[in-house]
Amino acid sequence: MRWTLVAILVATVMASAHPLRAQYTSKLTINGYSGFEFEKQLDEEGEGDPNGSFDADLFDLVLNFQVTDKIRVSSDLTWEHGTATEEDFGNVAIEYAFVEYAFSDLMKVRVGKMFIPFGIYNEIHTAKPAFLSVKEPASTNKTERIVDDAFRFYPRWGAGIAVHGDGLIADRGFSYDVFLSNGDQSETNPFEEDNNTAKAVTGRFRFEPSESLEVGASFYRDKQDSDGVSSLTSSGVELRYQARAWKVWAELDLGWLEPEDGDEILQMGWYVQPSYEFESGLTPYFRLERVDPSTDVADDHGYDVIAGLNYEVSGGFMIKIENNYYKGASSSSLAEFPGAGYNEIKAAVVLGF
Amino acid sequence: MKRVLLIVGLSLAALASAAGAQGQTKVIVSAEVDVSAISQAEVSRIYLGKKTFWDSGARIQPSLLDEKSPLTKSFLEENLKKTVRQFRAYWKRHLFSGQGTAPKTFTSSKGVADFVAANPGAIGIVDGSYSDDRVKFIELQP
Image (tube, rainbow over all chains, first blue to last red; front, top):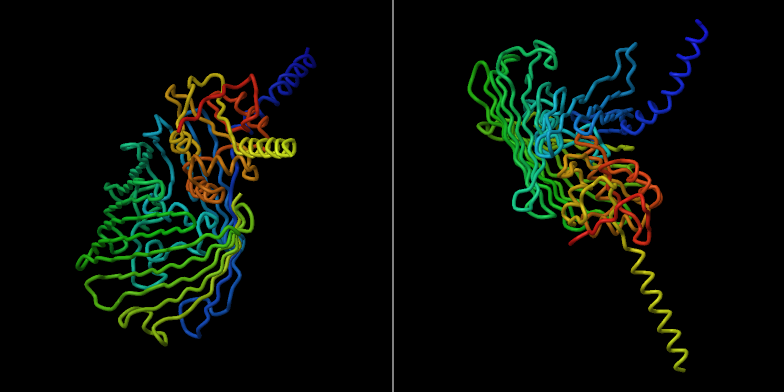
């Protein structure tokens, strides 16, 4: 009797094994990307890397599981800078992990940890195969990389509830995002616990007036109550234009930071990035970036002028090389260096799969 | 002389016909999809992940031949106004930002048809000369 039961159990498991595997493989999609970088500051003084360092930048797995027609789970798991936890090196993180319920194309509700949907680059800032340059624009995404005393217009991530939708207005495409999250602060883990009752609100709207042009506007507001910051409000506009092999991406952000003590600070950052894609896969690009950390203070702004080459060797495999020329005004943090600036070469080999 | 001209003429006509057929594609959907025609604009939105549901509420699962196929190149350029590289770049941004997954690709029209036949709500792009009773061929309207 016991052996009969065992035989029935084994037969049941074997019979169910194949359908389970088939279901698993047809609903799960595995993608990812990896990147390797090199940076070297060319001038003697500056804030770059004078030694010229290799960086095992990242390896990310992007998993999508289509649970039902309406429900999808999406995540990006990252291992950065040659992660070795025993040595406390690098970073292991969830870039995003959320569950999506799609009521329709116009309304997809997501819950979990997500990138803040602001501007062009934030949601792809780690996905180096998804853009031309070695790094995302510092002027809108990592302002302190250009001038020390600048603040970020919004945090990278948030935990909360989001709604995304795609639709048509007069036969022209649009999309929108609204995200309610805990906001940013360092008192608690912001992906687990809020430090106040006020929630951060992010909104973005994009519209395609023609097949070659997409414009958008973003908004972020958070009552922070920590780290010396009372509240942060940012807004931005973006443009993506493509005409044959020519492409222009541009963005302008404004941020109002209200300190717990002192007057409100208005910061401005923008970039313009034209590029031309040759048939061979070679794409020269240029990017002019500017950050003004306080519009009330004269000559505290800084620039990053980038000239680079991106070569897509084959599908998803890219080699990038660029020079960043950082140059600051007389009252900026860059003014302490000879000529108020420095050059830094950056290169990367990246693969998306 | 007339015979030579006739042969040359017929050969040129055959070549022109073959060249025309090379770039032709057909749109197929699974038998459950209650659609007989689809516009270029709708196809574009489907293959860019902006329309993911049929009017019936069924999820759309797009598929096409892989990017090495000249049919895919012409399909993307004519209907999505994108080169293969631009299409790939678009999907890298879409995929890695968590917006959705790219259309499934196959090396043959039969592979696309197998996928479409097996998945309710699926849509595929196949060679214009391909025929298959398991799937429904629908008209692609300008």
